[in-house]
Length: 113
Length: 115
Image (tube, rainbow over all chains, first blue to last red):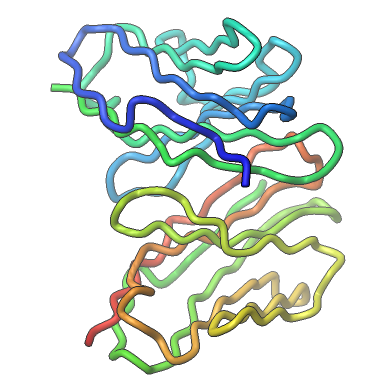
């Protein structure tokens, strides 16, 4: 069964550094998403992306964050100048154009120290 | 506004007991989807079920069953004959009817199955 692949599974970074979280969506999917889950809390929507542009973003997704689809397969989330409170699990998801098939990746656990 | 409420923060039951996880949702959309996800200690989100708002039939899958009641805006999840491997956090979630829309999660219910 096709999967959404996220790398790395765990990343540790120092406060103030930039990180890039990587995702490879399912190949025929056209809608892409990032979600965040702070430890012990609920999963929260960050941003959706379609046709090479952001279609919706939440209040969490401020200027510190950006997304990009640099080539035909990857979908990345960049966090600039990381803060301690950015420590969380980040989930990528994708869905296809013609039917409902939302699929989540297994997540990247980001730890900011 | 759209919202999902899981009033039970944490539940503990002894193995083989049945357990029901409650979910109440709010939406003004006439078309929407409801979901349940399981999050084991390893952290990934495991998809359990998706239900279209027009399909109010209850569903059974092995030891799992779901009770969708539009009249009370509830989508409850029952595990029959619980097992230790069922221990996890369970999230109920809601998405508007458009396929590209975000999913709104509840806060989750942490389920402990005691041997």
